[in-house]
Length: 506
Image 1 (cartoon, rainbow, N blue to C red):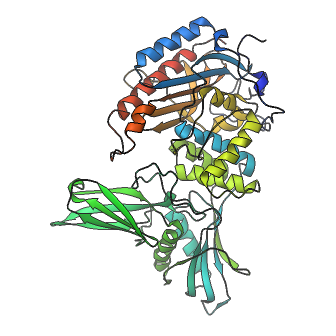
Image 2: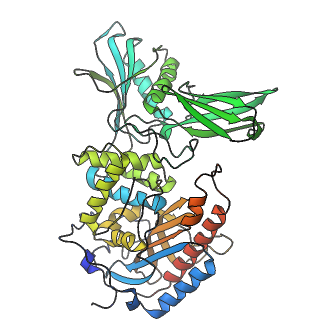
Image 3: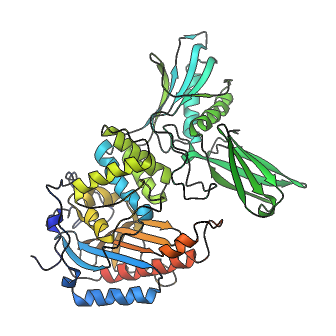
């Protein structure tokens, strides 16, 4: 079927990913997903977009023009069952994928670790327990859990007390299950909580809760490892209020301690926000001390070790939720730390030893090329780094590759089709599950649409104003002027395209 934009030369087999046909939208496949197709050679490029139906091209051009987007727009739409490129616009243009990259990381982690994989966090003792005392050190050892919370850590403290431990010789923390990285992306403002450090021992997505309340002429400040039921104070992150209006925050580091200042003129009467932590293992250790105190145990200050001692005995352990649940939560809430930890863990499980996120992301792109034929250029696993580049065509190739839809679509969130005012349509023309992606002056959406006729389509819609993004790079504002309106126009375009596509008869 040459001449109709067919992508089978990239490994998209006809009918290869139609496991959801005939099922209610929320149901799982009736059979286990097939392994991802492994390419046997270098994939050929897609056929020329001139083969696309003229009506489809014209309608999309009108929608893009009406959106009034400055910069670039890249779009690709593929019929999953046949591998046919239905329509595209500038689909070879590489643009930042933003958090759409997390859907690729989900595939990478599932393939390496399996959906039932769990992460363990342990307490180890380097000596025997005698009359309630550990004759040696207590070690809080991370296992790379990306979603460990204060309340879960409290369960570990409870186990320790239940084991009869009342005293320890020393207290150590270990985060060496993964590389220790002080931040995900160097091109972000220092106070953004979605750009924390990465470690093998992570807590609360490596964020500390900064809370303030006016007290007379000053402010009462707390820095906490906040949970739903527990809120231990920590000193690994410290805040000072200074009389100024700008900048809102300043950051410096004294050894492992994060030193923050905040502008008094920005605080108002009360408020709170999450700030990133740069020494996550020690942060978890300090939080654990507070939780142990609640159980009647007094622990000394934590010190960090680079390697676990031989012969240490496990005395308590907690497990994370299964990987599949972690991925679903990651794709819903777009948590950057989760993506980076899962990507690093997947690379290490393949026998690799990446020292940086870029090295691990490079390993993932090589795997994706082999598994799906897609050519990508990623610098991390979350999409936070603005240097990543993906074309809409390559994203559609990855999504439509054999076995991918059955594995990925159940994990993606539902995207409501809405009217111009943002209200959900009572009779939507399609059912969409996809991953969103947002950076300043960047908007992305990629996933799957079930049409009214029952066809499954894989799509990618990328828009970016890279010139405005570069100009705003040194701006102290978290959201530069013009970025919100760019995002709103991009989302209107996405809605227009999805609603047109849902009415297609493929």
